[in-house]
Length: 154
Image (cartoon, rainbow, N blue to C red; front, side, top):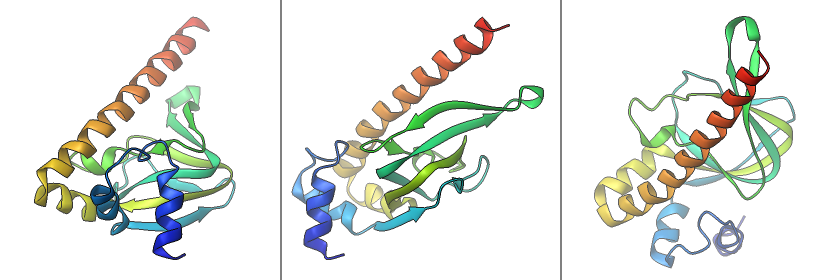
């Protein structure tokens, strides 16, 4: 995929549609195009969190294992959404399993590459932290709703 095509596609993703051209170019230096088949795992809880994903097509189920209760789906990430924040916060370990629900196409952003760029350019780092703070808030709300549902069934 040519850089110009990639820039145009990324420009339409809600997470970065309003990002400055300078910061978009910074992100482009850390991105790859990835695909996952239905049922495959993008990552597993406890593994090193080396990236985040902008979902283009398909959906990804975030799951936790709850002992005797089995696997609980906490949230489903859809096209136009962001998957993964653990690359940003030490110790850089995934907090959930992420399973492809249908075939998934996404952009994967290298976490080490981005952390280095955030350290080098603190304004860029602040912008990433600001955007990911919103993602964290969404995940906390989804987890809260899921917990309320689990305890309601008891």
